[in-house]
Length: 89
Image (cartoon, rainbow, N blue to C red; front, side, top):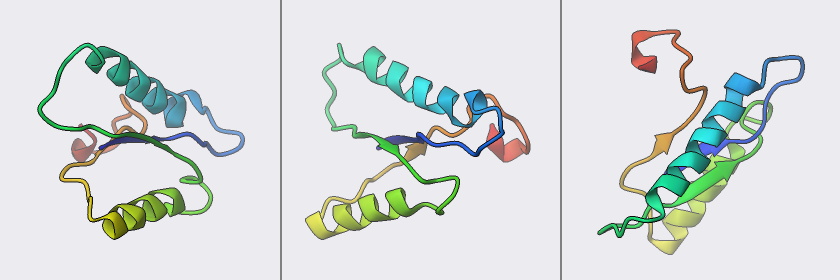
């Protein structure tokens, strides 16, 4: 699963958090569309990350669990290029 949140906080430079992450997710989708992969990749945009916690993500994962289809790997594209700590890289 590849995800990115679509919302931002008021009075902040939303280009980084998280228009950049959403654009990267969309570009990744576009890049991979011509490849036949041996596995499924779900691209999921989420909302409400900045103000209401991670409700969209939790609802999505709960739905996956109910369907018996939890992701093996999650790549969260949030503020790509923003380096605060070594773990950001």
